[in-house]
Image (tube, rainbow, N blue to C red; front, side, top):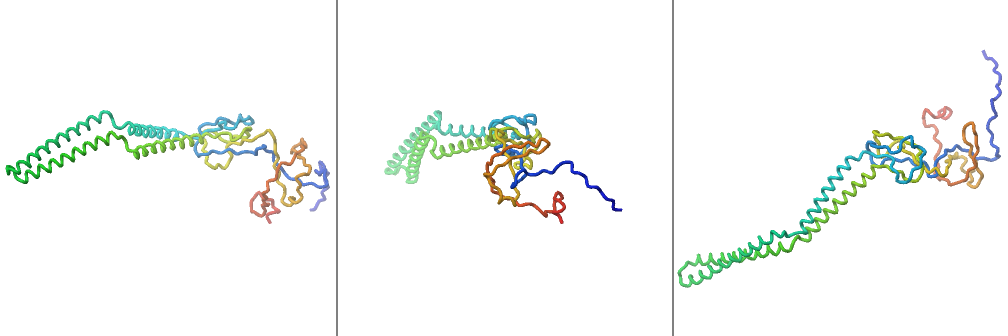
Length: 298
């Protein structure tokens, strides 16, 4: 029931470090600029993808269009706002052109009519005073003619004031309000143009296209869970290494280092120290995750 099993000879010798004192860690090769996960500035459905999976590895310049989110509603909004700007400018032009040349003769004629009416009423009032002295008219009629002459004088003054106001043109505060309406419409247009420009996602740096994870017709959010595209500068490769927290005290930035590429090739590459990101993340243990080793879930 308990058979004896012979010990098998290992197929190969286990890996051994050629150094007496080492700090080892797993690393990931990435671009010198780090792998930049490009996202969309505004949510929406992707209309166009300018660089597809077939373009992965190609060099891109800063500002190169990568893909475009649906911006048709913004284009329609821009036309509406441009029409509002035209209306505001036309309104200001109307105020600046005041008065219309055709309006002045009409108001001048009203002034002359008011002047003639005043002269008639004044003449009648003067005659009434003479007739009142001769007792050929009642005091009430004389008083009414005096009031009529006074009212005609006020109407004449009003007509002259209307003519002066018309010649003065638009009021300065009205011009300021109209100019403010133009500035507001122009600002709204610039805001919409900015949103339209944000709908087209562009390369943030000069580098290479590393990955494409977006297709036309897909919906993208402001904070997608997956990088839509990855861009990086491959002129120099960096290796990001996570050192165990227990080895932090043994790490020396001026020590020699080399990297061994995984796989059957086992090539060794000399590496130079670049920088340390001074952010320590503790090990995750006893989390209850199914992927956690059994000896950590006891």
